Structure formats: structure tokens, C-alpha cells
Image (cartoon, one colour):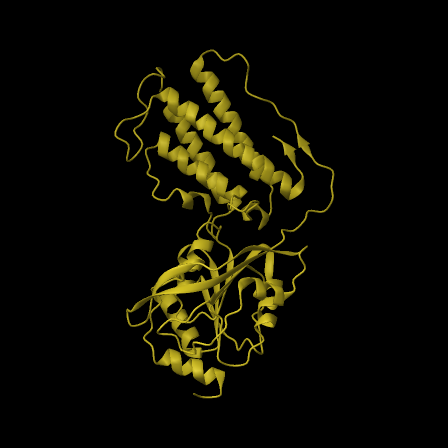
Length: 373
């Protein structure tokens, strides 16, 4: 074996076919519920992780010590129509670290037979996280039959030990996950084996807003005396729609798309989701992936999503304007055998919008202290 790390990894990737079809499952599990942002893939290898993230709207910087690995990722991203979302950089992490600030940094199996101060590299990664950003470190916890390391005496540091080596300030970073899951893995030749992974997920603290006096907006509810049931229901739904738009208006990037809770809920995602639900019930448009309706892409902005929401609700109001009998059938949602009643749709949309308006209340107050409608 060569004594030069760059030559070792270059020979390894030159000897393997270019195949970016597979994503590391623990990265997919972690990133699936996050809103797309800026991602850094340390030791990108074949590029499966970088392309998987880019297909979901992430802007990815793919880094490897092997020039062949980096060039292949760039080429495959370009061929997949993802060239604008994937950048490649060659770095020997023992010497240099990528510049920039990232919402997600992935270090998948960043282990090497050569001398490398991994703690220093991972500490630099933690420092490169944006407020609220996550660092996912996945290490081998066992030896697979196809691994370059077949030393059965190898001791793998535990996730807790890796976290301890980083010596991060607990006021600025917290350990979200530290465990040792097992899975069935498939090697390059198609063989399978049960392997153990060591998983460490660290999150940087969200930026704290400057102390300020909370601003409370005046809240004027719908009219108490509507002429009929439909007017009353439509009045409450319109009131809640306006509340949602007001909660999102004026919130800057990236706070408007930064999750305020571990589930990934964010203000911009709520607008996107409610738009999809309105189109489902009033305009008969299908929802193919409900979870994805909560995740705005990198190209979706406050302005574009609010415009889409307002255009959708205006079209929905046109539909409702023709409803004279609320016991009659509403448009049949795609995939449903029977249509709900019009009364049910209006009541459900009030419930749906009110629930997410409550979420938006909390998220907005966390960002800048604004309360009320």
C-alpha cells in the first residue's frame, strides 16, 4: 500500500466504476425531514449522497481528497440536470477545510488508514455550521467483508467518545443523537452483511434574537353577525388565511425557512403545505408526498410562496361562492372514492389552517418576538 493518502484514495476510486446511485441510509433518514439549505459532503466518494441531497433542493459542496471522485460527482450532477446545485472541491482535510457556512454537514465513514486529526476536522465542521445547522457523523462500528480494513482487532470509537474529543461548548452545540444501529448492507460486488454504524448528530444552537420588546399586532376577528352559515365559515377561514400570511411576511432569510423545532417545522414550509392542502380539497389537485409539502426548496421564496398561496385561496373562494347548499358534495379529492360535503371541507380547512396558524404564532415569536395576529 502506498504511503501517500492522495494516491491511495485516487487509486481506489479510479479502480471502481462511477456509480452515484446509492445514498447512505442514515443521511437519508436524517435529511429527509429537513428543509433544503446548504450542505457540505465531507469525503463524498462516489457522490450518491451529494446527488440525493441535490435532488431534494439542497445546494451541495462535495469534497474529497481524490480528484477522480470530485470530478465524477460534478459530471454526474451535470448529467442529471443538477449542475447548478452541486459544486465540487478537492481537499486533503489534514491540511485544508472548505470555506463557508452550512445547514447540514455530512461526514459518512470519514475513516482512513493514514494519520488524520479527525477531532480537528470535525471540530472545524461544527464551527462551520450555520445557526441551527446539523453535523452528522457516521462511522463504522464493525468491519464489512468488502472493507479496505480487514484488521479484526480494530477498535472503533463510540459516538460518545467522538463527541468528547470535539470538546464543543454545550451552550453552542448539543448532541441530538448518539447510538449504534445495525443494518443489512450491500457491498460493491452485491454481497450483503449485517454491519454496525456509530452515529453522532450534533446541532448548533439557533441564533438568539437581540433582546427587544415583543411587538403585538392588533387582532380583529371575523364579523359576529354573518348573514348565513356559509358566510360565517368563509369569514373564519379568511381570517385564518390572513393570519398565516401576516406571520410569514417580513421574516428574513434564512430564519423564515429555519426549523424552530426538531420536527423540521418552519414558517415558509407551513405556507407551502397549506397551499397544497387548499388545492387538494378545493381544486382537485393531488398531493403525491405530504411530507415534502412542508419543505420549501432553495428556489422558493417568501414572495413566491405567498403569491402562490394567495392565488390558490382566491381560486378556492371562487369555488365556494357557487356553493348554495353546504350539505351538497364538494369536489372529490384525488384518490378518494366519495366526495365530502361542502360543510365538512370548510370546517376541515378552518381546523387545518387554525392548527398551523398556532404553529406559526410560536415560530414567529421565537424569531423576533412578534405576537398576536
